[in-house]
Each structure stands twice: as C-alpha cells, then as structure tokens.
Image 1 (cartoon, rainbow, N blue to C red):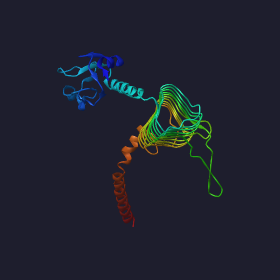
Image 2 (image 1 turned 45 degrees about the horizontal axis):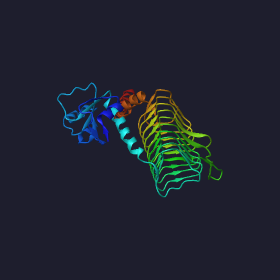
Image 3 (image 1 turned 90 degrees about the vertical axis):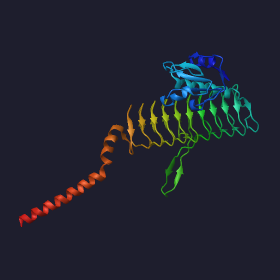
Image 4 (image 1 turned 45 degrees about the vertical axis):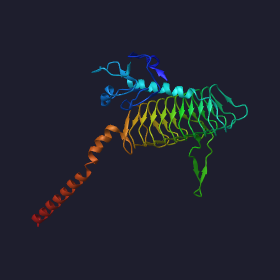
Length: 350
C-alpha cells in the first residue's frame, strides 16, 4: 500500500488532489478501479482519463485537462517512465517479504549466503556456491558448484546454472533458463563420427542483466562466454560458446548467435535473427527480424534480409525483386518480338 505523497516523492512528481490517497496495485487506465493507480501516455487512451475509476493517475506535467477528474493526480516529466518506476516500487515491496528457506531445500555444508536471501522449495545448491545479499531463488532451481550470484539478483523457478558460472548483481533470470550448458563443439573424425570437445570454460553475466524464460547461454570452450552489464535477452534466445555481448544490447526472442561471435554495445536484434560464428558486430547496430547475418557489421549500421544486407540497399533491392514476375513477362514479350523481327529479317534476305 502506497500513498500519493509517497509515490510522488519516489518519482520526483507533484500531487494535485489528496496526498493521503492510497493504492494497493496498478491497473491499465481503461480497467482502473478504486485502490489502483493508472497512467496516461498514449493519446489513443485519452478518453479514459475522464472516465477511469482509479484512485491515482500519473499524468505528464504538460498535459492540460479539459475538465476536472475524480482521481488524485501525480504530475511527472514522463508518465511512461514513471509507471515503470512505480511497478518497480511494488515489485520491491513484494520481494522484500520473501526471506528465509522453504522446506525440502538442499544446501551444502558451510553454505555462504548474504543477508535477506530467499530460497524456494526443491532447490539444490552445490558446494562452493555463494549468494550475495537479498538474492531471491525461487523453487526448483539448480545452482552448481562454485557458482557466484551477486546482490539483489532474482532467479525464477526451474533455472539451471552450471558449475563455475558467475552471475552479477541486480540480474533477473526467468523460468527454465539454462546458464553454462556445454557449448556445441565436436571434432569430425576420419570414420565420419564426431568427437566431443570438452567445454572447460564458464559463463560470466555482469550486473543489471535480464535473461528471458527458456533462454540458453553455453559455457565457453576455454575462457568465458560473456554477457556484459545492462544486456536484455528475451525468451528463447540461444547464445553459443565464447560469444560476447556488449553493454546495453537488446536481443528479442528466438535469436541465435553462433560460437565466438562478438556483439558490440547498444545493439538491437529483433526476433529470429541468426548470426553465424566468428563474426564481429559493431556498436549501435540494428538488425531487423528474421535477418541472417553472415559477415562482419561496422558500427551504426542497420541490417535487413536474408542474407543480411544494409537496410537501405535491401529496400532498393526489394523494390526490384517484388516486381520480378512482371519483369519476366516483359522479357518474354520482348523475346517473342525479337524472334519475329529476326524471322522477318531472314525472309527479306532470301
């Protein structure tokens, strides 16, 4: 439960109305009801500003009301950013109540963990693992030998973290993600079989990283597969062995990055992008959905298509190849006309 005054202070906002108004949750503006907070940022939803039954509404400072409204108003610089902070405030309160150990947890002898941790039922933590302060480990998680987890990290149900991996502070790892499974390394033999190459490295996840449900990050053959601070990975992303992902890069669902490729900082990968191995992708690169990347990409470039090419070139090419059927008909017609002209020319020469 939070008052308008408390929320406004948290957001550096100002209150118009009753500062003591309290809310216990957050709702969409069209579904607001007493006891909830909502926000208005998209002009498509403006009509709901005047009809919502929410107790508190976040509005931009420069938004001018056409008529008075019932909810208490909190004015902020950016209501969309403000609601993200409010959701974080409610989440912090919920997590703060989770402490201690559920039943049926396996912990090693002399297990080292920080203050205010939570460990859910049927979790297994191997020897040498360490948890920082306020780490939340939900049920049915496996944490392998000598794994380190930083302060305030949240690990949701079913996550598997293999031996020797390092997870930074303030990370979120969603359900059934697998961190540190073997990289896909096999040496072809003369008899046609494949010999497994031992994967003796680890995975290092730096601070403030979010990893989506079902995502897999393979351990390196030697050294570390590296996910730098601020990276956000969607659900069902595959990061192969020895890959490096630069700071603040965002990768959407069903993207796969093959072994030893290096991705720069502040890149954006849309869904279902495929990157072959041993490539270098520069900083601030944008790759459109379903693109296939088969060569190095310099800083700042936007890529599109399969195989991927510079977006502006792809769009010019698309303008041509979408008209190929009509062009083929024109060519067929021209061939027939040329054949007629050649026949006429032969008749005249005889």
